[in-house]
Image (cartoon, rainbow, N blue to C red):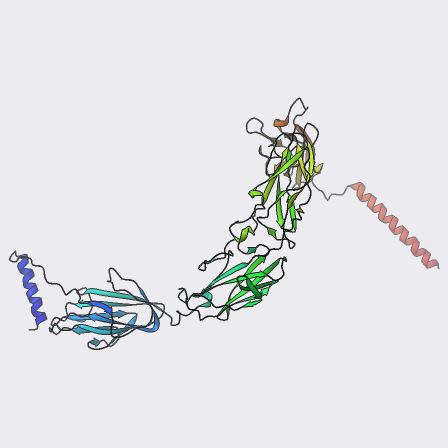
Length: 559
């Protein structure tokens, strides 16, 4: 009888005796803590290991390693050397090779050895090779308790390692994985995945910056400096090179730990240009970047001018101002100030954004990129109704001020009178009718733009007419613009003559003889019907034409 069979019979007797209460429970001895363990081989090396795996268990795996297809890893397994005890090592997603004693199964996916009871050296050298890329290779060490060389529910797993397997060569640089970004001119961030917002705008005389970072096929940072990175200007009057050293259209720098900064500059001083640069890695174009180099300020434009309240003293948000270069690029963070034209009606221009044109971000390239919301300005009304022709100015380093277009800073009173009119007296069903309300202050000037036309509950706006559907309904918050407010209506289909009622109770008063007004209009369907008289008139005209032609023909025949 073999020792293993004897052990099983003893175990059976022990279980029977325990069930009958004839035996005390005594803890069975466990395998030596080192048995069934794996450790990196100190004798044989590895190939193609990108990241080493750490040993864990099936229940609690260690760190997953990374291995190239075609590579291998070498480990030492600590087998159980007790007499008749088997140690099995199974591989999934790869094969095992014995570098010494032990038996490899015919499918090369498992290795085993039986203990000889010598309790001598029980460390055995094994090598594992992955079978395919895109999969995992795992290795598990088992205690084959029943000695049948089959891993089933009777066995216990111990050491466990896992490797992700990648295609060979992925540790090399992958041009398509390179990160190429337009960044702020002082940025040392190379790992970003997108251009820095606003960084593509550069103030006159400053540098643009493109940061390049190389990555391997695995997506890990490539830190060697053996790969060519080039920058080629493909469009625009600009140059590329190192900082403060842009001298040519082509630049082939040496990377530093797999990264490099490429700077752009205007080719002609004080001339705006759109610079397009192609970045190539190892001969492959990986990105094309566009940087707008602005020119010096060429113009200021004041627009969207409102009428101020003559009794409102200092007011803001009455107009917008932007700065542009000669190419029409809108420039942010340009210092501005009051120009000419203040008088006894309007004075003291004030600006938002710290007296500068609005920038997307003042911390990016000196605020070169303009904000989508421009700087607004306001002025002070003295209480006198009237206007002032004013300008905004920017003074560059040469001291010669650049003035904006002349705009009218108006100060008028609130509305006290209003009237209304349609754009046509008669409409066809389906037409769009435009109603215009015109308001004036107590002096007959256009009402200012600052006062709402109604007040909730107290002075509700009411505008209504039969067969007229408002495109956008009037609200109490609406305001006049230059003394006017327009509303559009879709004309209905019922023909007839009607009256539109326009009631702005906020402005109705006996003092200014103002009350709700009505506007007449009519709706008439277009018709192709021709009256009898029109038919008879057409016939008479046709007969006269025929008679004329007959007389002309007779004259020709007599010749």
